[in-house]
Length: 198
Image 1 (cartoon, rainbow, N blue to C red):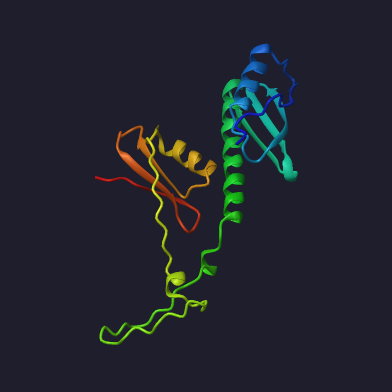
Image 2 (image 1 turned 180 degrees about the vertical axis):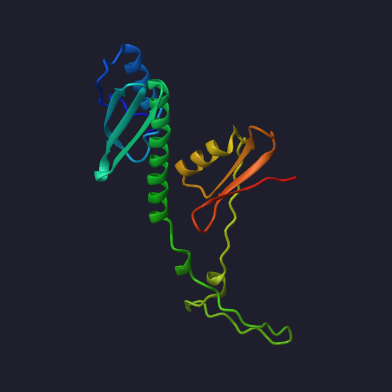
C-alpha cells in the first residue's frame, strides 16, 4: 500500500501575492501528509490568491483514472486557508476510496440462500449421494477464522479512515477519548456504525 508519494510534483503559484518560502514549505508539508493509497496522485497544483483581507488557497490534484480533486477555502489567513483546503481534499479522497470499495464489494443479494423446510425429528434421514451437487455439507455456510490484534488508540475519525484503507469489514480499536474498547463496522447502506460496550 502506497501511503506517500515520492517526488510528487507540486506546483505552487501566487496571484496578487508573492509566495514566501514559509508558505511553500507549509503547503508542501500538508500535501505530503495526505494518504496517497487511492486515488493515486500524479501531480498537485496549489494556487494562492490575496484580495484585500481575503486569503484564498486552491488545491488541484490530478490523479490516475482521470480523477481530478479540487477544493478551495477563503479565510483571513493564508495558512488557515491552506489547512482548510487540505481537509476538504482529504475528505474528497476518502469519498473516492469509499466509492471504489463499494463498487468492488460483493452484492449480498446474489449470495446463495439455503432452502428452509421443517425438520421432522421422527423421520429417517435419507442417505447422502456423494456424487450429488446437493451434498448437505456443501450447502452449510461455515467459516471460522480467528485473529488477534492489539487495539490501537484512535479517535472515531481516525478509525473510519483506517477502516476505509483496509480491506476488512470491522475494526476494533481503543477510543482515544473514553479509553474503552470500540468496534467500528460498515453497514449495508455504506455508512459506518460504532459499538461501544457499557
